[in-house]
Length: 554
Image 1 (cartoon, one colour):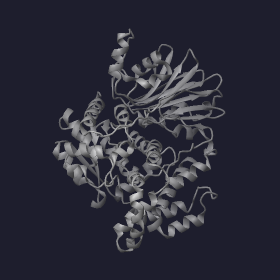
Image 2 (cartoon, one colour; image 1 turned 45 degrees about the horizontal axis):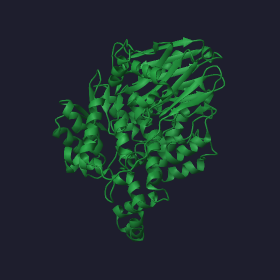
Image 3 (cartoon, one colour; image 1 turned 180 degrees about the vertical axis):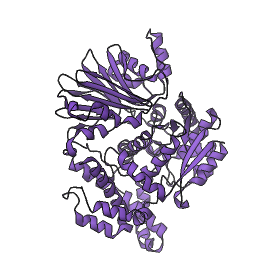
Image 4 (cartoon, one colour; image 1 turned 90 degrees about the vertical axis):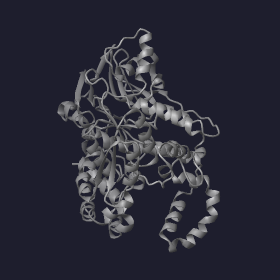
């Protein structure tokens, strides 16, 4: 995995500081093995590399045939594509997937990403056409940002270089902050002059005219069939996981003990003996899935390591999280995830993760509530009467009430994918690349996406469970104890932290609020502080935003 930084500096803004080298250093963590850049008449093309394939010959920028390529990601079918291109007389000077991507562009033009199976972001400088070609993979696994200011244009893997070029973030959009305070993330642009680079889309930027054009957009299949067999799904996952285990370095697995990572571990163990697996544990058993991850590790005889995240680690990693996030992003699970990635990166460069299983196979409770709401609605008055007698019933009532809406199952399913793009994948990318760790996501692949798109999401659930095809497969591979365990997710004791060890720190920090008062005034902040047992999520969200603003505004 790598870092991309392209700047068009026609007015020589970089001569007044910060320099291009300083800006490239802001994303050096994404590629600690090598960094370099080219400068052509005010066009800067920079790259930082995490060496995974062709360790000696894959450095970038790659210059070939009047083109310069910057590439971040992995193309899993690059060997097949390379063989096809070689049969047509195309020669290669490296063994990397980077050169294959460039030759695919040369052969197929703007729609070349149709031929790529992988996770990627790229920038190509086409010297003859005098324009930049850039884009992202179909599911938006790898990030890319574009800023088009009056004095400079920037394309980057993270927003850190863009933030550093803007004086005190004066153009930050209030609508972004408002949506962040509501949801913890935003579909909005951070700046008015920022352009959203959509997933699965190829753009061009004309260096002479400054025009941006959308040249190609991948289309998703829309078919429906009945019934899904675990065997066909197993075959696809076997192909995908075997493909994603390919690297010139060792590949491990992030094993949470949930269904998705357990399936990946089971299948990966068929191709790698004593594969390395890693998990996070908490000092409170109710938040830890250590029992389940150890169960899977023992069954498949993996080389398993656990790392315990406690309150001491919490205080250590909060400043790192603030340093890591390039835009305001609220997800307390980033803290243990950063700790996990930090420790795993000391052993290897690449791991597989179960991200995307819930989104592809309708694993979220809110989808089942929408599908079966006509059955559930008559029960709500009964739950309302009984919720005062049981914390469990109160919890069930609150979940149902908060997730009932007029949205269809299909609409909510698609919304889950947008959240995956805007929040969850961004979180994983930031946390892992901060420590130079590549996280591959087998569920978010071309094979699995095509398979899932044959069916409506309602096929993946019943009243009791989501992800029914994966549960059946997990039952075969791992056992029923994993397959039909209660969905837990990456839970953390945030309420305890905010009401305990973090309360004074949060109170002191937000008392000097940088958040515009038109959006959030001190009266509202104080009302949250007076009831941290209720508003602990609001408080942590405000705290993260305030820390981020203080870091970025002088």
